[in-house]
Image (cartoon, rainbow, N blue to C red; front, side, top):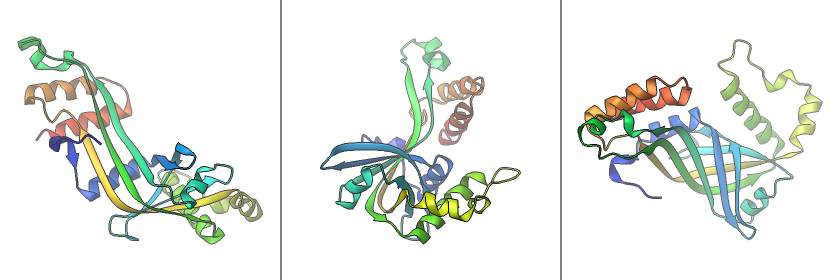
Length: 211
């Protein structure tokens, strides 16, 4: 991908944090069936390989797992906060008028060795961890064991596991680092006025990465 040095984010902990905060990744394969892309929720396990391991599952009816089984290259894209940036927020607009709109975003791209897993015990553990990731903040979290065991066993027969040991991971944080301090301040203030969670997240990134 196009990666200007000032937008590069190489800290593995920061990259992992984005994946955990935005676990719905776009799973992309390029195999005999051509390019295939599916949104898939992932669970990240940091300790299984040097850069981490992604675990997910697909419906058996989803033919993408067969492409992976046949050795298709895999790319997973995790999209973090993003926002349109209007030139009206820039101090430079009032000073020279030489400004144009842009888009701010943070995302992580992952490539690695992917394999298909059909072991029911692995699948049961994966859905349990994925559910735990997303239920942990609830006052009364739902757990897989809340459903009847025979029902869960039947559901497991309809899915296939996917595991990816991360070989390369790239982070791109385009968050107004290239703008003067007054412009960054204007962007952060403008985003503060938008009642949207990702706008607040982007405002925080603009402030932190502008230091």
